[in-house]
Amino acid sequence: MIPKRFRPAAIAALTVALASGSMLAYSASAGTGPEAADRATSEAFARMAEDVLSERTQALVEDQPGRRHSGQTPAKTRMSAQLKKDEEAAISSLRSRRTRLADLGEAYTGADTRVAVDRATVAGGKATVQVTEQTTLTYKKLRGDEPATTDFRTRYELTLTSKRGGGWELTSIKSQDSGPVAINEPVAAKVNVVKDDGNQYPDGTPASTKYPAPAKPKAKTGGTYDYAAMAKYAEKYWSNYNPAYRKFNGAGGDCTNFISQALKAGGWKAVPGSTSDYRNWWYDGARQSDSWVGANEFAWFTLSNKRAANLASVYQTDVGDIVQVDFNKDGSKDHSMMVTYRSSAGMPYLTYHSTNTYRKSLASIIASYPDAVYYAYRT
Figure 1 (tube, rainbow, N blue to C red):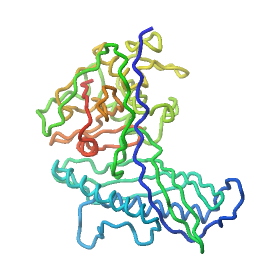
Figure 2: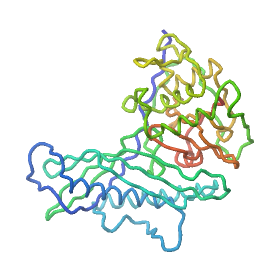
Figure 3: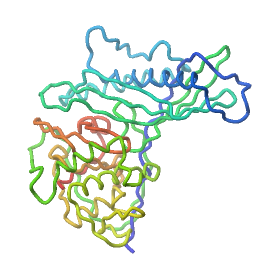
Figure 4: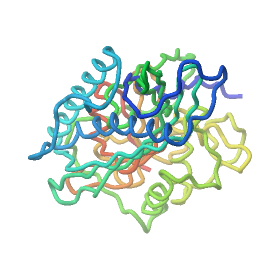
C-alpha cells in the first residue's frame, strides 16, 4: 500500500461574535430540554442574522451617494459590548479588503444578502440557531466583460441569550463550512499544521500570484477534453448538488469531489485500481479513490498521470483549469477550485464547493489569503 500524508482538517472559517434584538423571547425558566423555536421567534432570528451579514456585505460595495456606510452595525442589532467591538473591527477589515480589490481592478456596485433559518432550538434562556446565507454581489463593469455577479451560500450557527424584559442578544455566529471564507467573512482562521510523513510525492510547483501575467489561452472545445462542458457542469451544480454523487461536506470538505465530477463531465477517464493508490482516479457510486476526494491525492494523481501540468502563474489559468491552495504553508494542500470564466483582462473566476461559490474572482481569493501558497494546473 502506498503511504499517504494526512490531509489537514477542512479550513475552519472565522468565529465572529455578534448580537441583535428581536420581538419575542423565551424566558430563562423555559423547559430544561431544547425545544423548537416558534415561527415568529425563528423569523426574528433570521432578521437578526440578515442585519449583521448584510452590513458585512455592504462594506465591500462601492460607496454611492445616499448609501449608508457608517462602519457601525445596524442600530437595531443588539449585542454585548465585546461583540459590538469585534463586529466593528470586522467591518473595518472588510473595507480594507475592498481597497485591495480596487487595486486589482475589481469593485462591486450592489449586493443582496438573504438568510433562512434551518433549525432553531431554545433551552434555559439560550438559543442555538442554524441558518443559511445566500449572497449575490454585482460586479462593476470596469472593463466590460466581467461576469454579472458572484454568488455564494454558506451556513452559520448562531447562539443567543434571552434578556430580562424580552428580546434576544446574539452572542456568537460561527461558520459551519470548510474551504475559503466567504468574501464577506473578515478573518480567515488558522488551520492545524500537519506534519509531513517524510514520503516523497509529486506535489507540483507553487505558482506566482503577481497580477497580471502573460496569457496562456487554450481551446475550450475540439480537443481531448471539453473544457466548456467542465465549466457548464460546475456552474450548474455549484449550489444544487448533483444527486448522482455523494456529498463530503462533513468529511473534510466537498471541494475536490466537486471538481472531479466536473472534470469527468469534460472527458477525464477513470483509472481503476485500489482506493489508496494516488495513481488511480475513479468513482463507482459506493466508493471512490482517495484522489477523487482528497486535495493532495488529486494533485499527485494529476501530475503523475500527466493529466495536467503546473502553470507558472495562477493568473494564467483558463476555463477548466484547477487552482489549489495551501492556506497555512505547511506543505499540504487544503482546497481545490475550478476556473469557469476568464475575462479579457486576464482575471480567472472560480466556482467551487465548501463554501459553495459561483464565479468568485481569483483576486478576491488572494485578497483574503495573501500569504497562502497557490498551485495552478492546466488540465
